Image (cartoon, rainbow, N blue to C red; front, side, top):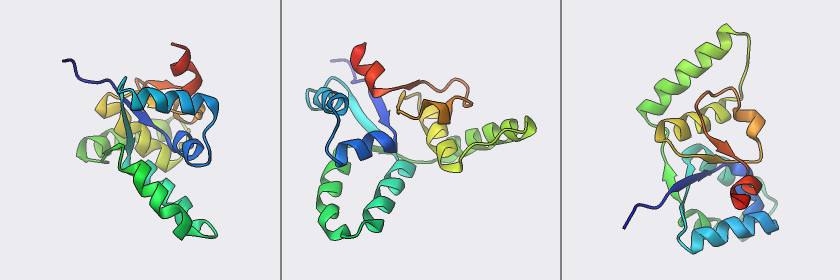
Length: 143
């Protein structure tokens, strides 16, 4: 049996799912439940999700559901290879006078070195990370 293809979900896709998913995100998650692919996210995205939980007016209401959903995902670490790639990318961008949000840099570096497509609606955030495959949830569902 062939290994399942992995997809890395960006924070915006996870938040959509937590808040009562759009039709597209429902279709995406249906494919996960049907074992069409393996859902992943990064430690950085996990941090962003948990930050949102603890900033909410009643975090205690969100903790259980958040744990249940996050436990279903493979969480990919910001490791040494990702840190080297992030340093290389940031240096290259700074030399060109370009900027990137540090969390986007880390997420993109993790997905790039892991060779996992990043599913995001924020494609523009990642366009300066060369050789990173990004796809919107809508484009993924259509293909």
